[in-house]
Image (cartoon, rainbow, N blue to C red; front, side, top):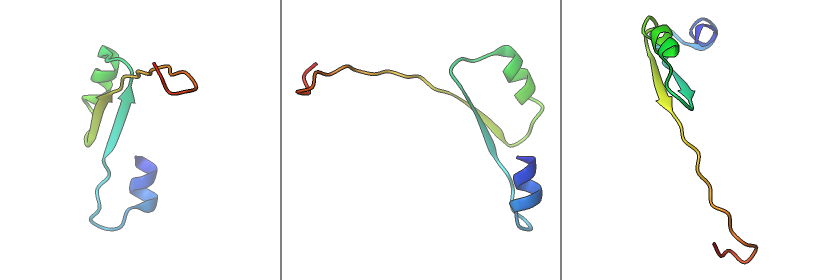
Length: 56
């Protein structure tokens, strides 16, 4: 975010960031609590196996 702010932004533009993690973590939340303009998202993964003919 610092690089983008100093090297890529034009006058008047703001930088916003996101952190994406599988699990929530108290240490991560504490670190993010002192940073402005950053959001936290969790992700989850699921999948389904199919036969070659496309059946479950």
